[in-house]
Length: 138
Image (cartoon, rainbow, N blue to C red; front, top):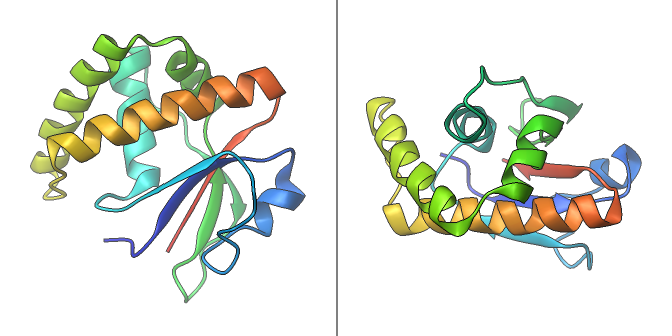
């Protein structure tokens, strides 16, 4: 499992590529979490919320031997998250817990709901600012 995960809104790839565990006090809209692989999770979220095949996240900082990476969330997922109601997010979180369990990547229901609702809040912020939504983890 990743040691640290952060979803965040940044104006561009240059700023996003500077984020990471050593730059947590950056002042950008963000939330931190653990307990899941975010690149796998965003694919599951897109399938569950958009009802479409997952779009591969665009890598901004490729993973190297240290296990650190930064990627941009797919635009379709961001749009779907921004428009999703709380009840839709809670239902998707429950389904996501089931998918994660099947992959031997268990996540508690409470953490799943929090991750999806926080991601939706960030997606709304990103849309309002006309900025991308990114994630880093290691």
